[in-house]
Image 1: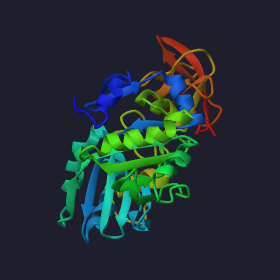
Image 2: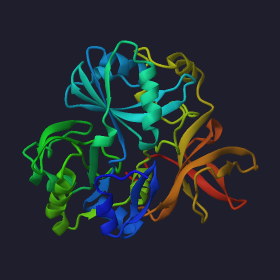
Image 3: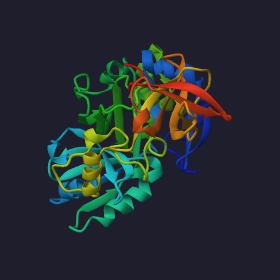
Image 4: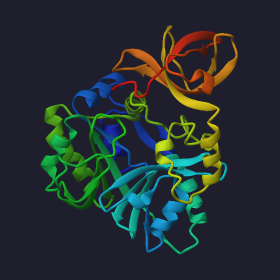
Length: 362
């Protein structure tokens, strides 16, 4: 297993550790519910240094990004970021990612999922026919996500950058906690506000930044948070998780990601997705709440009232904020309307649930 710059800190803090995407990662510290509620009400720190980062540079960098991603990256100016996906040649999703515009038309950073770093690198490289300068900086980039309603207030004390007024999907670059060349962004994966802090993993910078963050936030109740609470937080907001809610077999239109699929440019599988949009999708990713008692889990089958199989669960959990079991699932379009009754197969028993609007937590 690979380590992040913070692995030993997590172990020393008593975190429950486990393998995730090839890394030894903290799953929980004090418990999922407590950690979840800390982020919703105050602030918490996630080590997400396992994520992948690619730098694309040169006059043709934007052209390459436009050809391999579904969203329109030409709209990006320096200091702005964008959520997008890499469609495969069948209209499925190679990965979802963030595109950061460092210098307009010249330099971009792509942030990809940890489990897909090699896959994404090879996929993008395949389309790099114009000699775009590509650098995989994943192994030397550290990333902390400081999330929660008080996160920005605490972090502003560690930088001269104006991060208090960072708009959603924008970023600043400068000195943070005494370390130069740090990117602070506001993309968020918890729906509770906050920032992400990217910096080069060299010397003692990682430990220095961690210690400075907790010097400010620790006395105010900020805590380290594991990946288990990250999952419950993102699910309450209806954010997709690659490998669960989206993958190589799901299209962005089925997943409700039509808003990042722009047909005003040429990109991989554009014709397939255009045809799908014109004909309408046969299945949709929906949110649901359990009506009867039971916890939905990934890949549980779903039936209609007549016992016909109509889909499967992609993500499910007991929501700490709502106090009820929630999930996301692909179901046939006939069963996708808000208010539809569906039945989750839990240990061979059909347990009633109802389709609801995403996000679950407003």
